[in-house]
Image 1 (cartoon, rainbow, N blue to C red):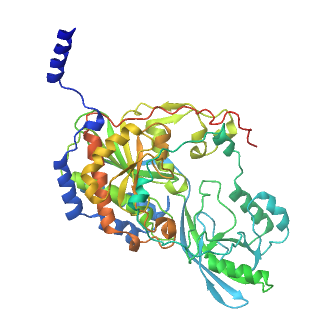
Image 2 (image 1 turned 60 degrees about the vertical axis):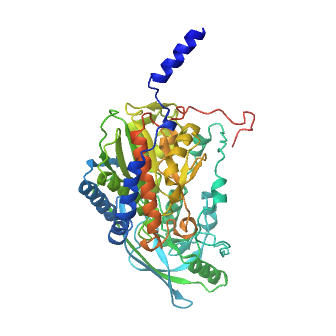
Image 3 (image 1 turned 120 degrees about the horizontal axis):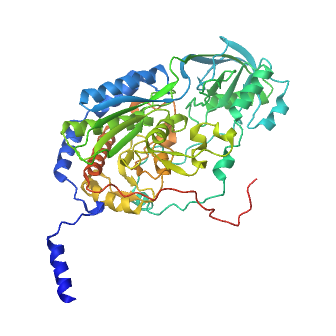
Length: 537
């Protein structure tokens, strides 16, 4: 036995051993090139300026988004990337704002700050009418206002009382903040919760039908933020679901003034115009894809993505021209270095993210995995993104194993401080090694947390290793996200250069590692966290 053990030991010393992914050495020479390109030859701010100042807000299927789809493809071609293409999926109507204005004419003249709500129709020219304060949040509220809204401009929101900020609008993560991100999320599974949620009514459609039947001239909602900020978000974009009554969002301070006047008996009167256009020449939206071809590992690829679409209250700079520019700059850096990765590196600019993460879901459903239909035909008729999480089992497609890693950027223009490992402890060990050469740039943290709300989530739902970076928050959540000041002015050039370097480094590491990035098990229908909980109504 001793002789045998000695022999095995000797063999171990001379036989090549496949290193686990976590032990694959980082190519620090390549890192030197990435740092040089990203720090000294960056084009990221020119890219961001073109997307924002020149093209502007890029609402899905709007003329501005069509221009962004054309321009980004040409930029990828100019960089020398391969297989540049627009990959379509069914979306709905395009929509854009021509002009809008609102003016109080009584009890005194006053210009008011508004924006049309996306995918609502125009007013019938300039309309004039008295204000009715009629807050409605569910169909049960309709009876109270029946017969009282004809010819009126209807204020549908509760005004609230306003609020003053108690913390600075702009901040960066501290070491203490980052240290607190290492715990795992503990899920709470409720039986059939996802399917129950599908049965809730579409209140926006119910409200529009009620207001149209009552003969309202237009409706007005309050902005969700103070400080004169506007958003204009709306979701009735599908063909055949266009509202009948014009809707606008009003700055919170202006809205509350109207409510106070109305409740004091002053009966405000408004002149209101909302002129918009619908664009129906093509109901498909398009993801923009481009590749740096791999030299081995046939069929396998790694991927970087960000959503190209935005809302139109401003130019969609932090959300998400920043992410699109990071992805494009990472492509430029790697192509300029002449890298020949083992796996293909794919760059994706997603569409329709703001309306429900639709573009990346379409990619998952088309190329990676789909889900079995529900037993209820009525629920199956709902949009794919609404039913997705309720459908089991997951059915992998032929290309399921080809995508070995996906990295996403979509939380403003803050620098990358690390990455969320999404509960994948095996991948977390790999990321620790990959981040070591980037510590000097402030990217140090591997969080075990799950992150949501953007284009990696549907990949995670089918077991694809998809990850969102940790970014400094800056003023993204406090005042920029979806608002009328999301312009180029609020982008931070140093942060974006750093983010593109980190993105390029992660892509090259993932493309060249001998072993694919570790995966979580294929998700299956979870059991109830509390099997003895009372059934939900």
